[in-house]
Amino acid sequence: MSFSATIITLFPELFPGPLGASVLGRGLADSLWSLEAVQLRDFSTDRHRTVDDTPSGGGAGMVLKPDILAKAIDTVSPAGDPRPRLLMSPRGAPLTQARAHELAEGPGAVIVCGRFEGIDQRVIDNRGLEEISIGDYVLAGGEVAAMVLLEAVVRLIPGVLGSADSHADESFENGLLEYPQYTRPQSFEGTEIPAVLTSGDHGRIARWRAEQSQALTAARRPDLLKK
Ligand code: SAH
View 1 (cartoon, rainbow, N blue to C red):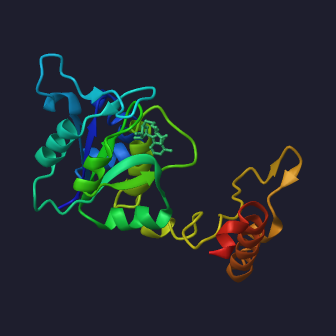
View 2 (spheres, rainbow, N blue to C red; view 1 turned 60 degrees about the horizontal axis):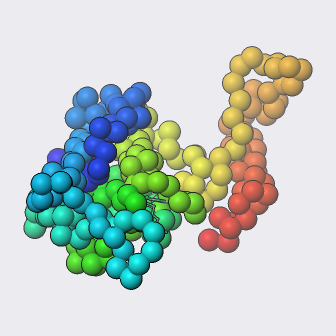
């Protein structure tokens, strides 16, 4: 069984979008992973296909109704579905490379995309939705956030990116930011590639890269070193 993603959204036509391009798109075509985007409105029961209502207690905007969303979740993910149920949410735990690895090793994910002011708290509680945030800012909806999450996860699925060890040195994999990368030409606008990288001495190259990673992380993301 390959990684299977089901998205619950008011805008299924946005998918696969960028997830259909390049290596992720090839992985999709080759069934290394699968994607299904489901229209939340299809689970509405009234003539107007209503999915939202005004916030209890007052205030601006609209809230996604719990009954419609619960029906959608129960339909796409019946009891026994081993996939985690995620809700894209600015209140969620920040997405990390570690969580991306865990998800990539699992059976897939059911991902709920919020809109408007968000969704009724009771469906979050009663369906055990895990809230995940992609950063400390507010988007208009969960769709782009779900794409960010899936792009981070799917590129880790074996076979999608090719060589498995192409991940090992990347930013966040070892709690550090990646060292600077260079490629030809040897001289670019008067600046040479650092000599160590063309020395052929693999021990020295590894040490230089480790030092650069440490220094960059200390300068830009001291919070990562504390962890
Ligand atoms: N009123 C909410 C924000 C609603 S934004 C609040 O203040 O917390 C509408 C939807 O966009 C959310 O339900 C969520 O699905 C999505 N969204 C917005 N910002 C996000 C973020 N940083 N990470 C993940 N999803 C986000």
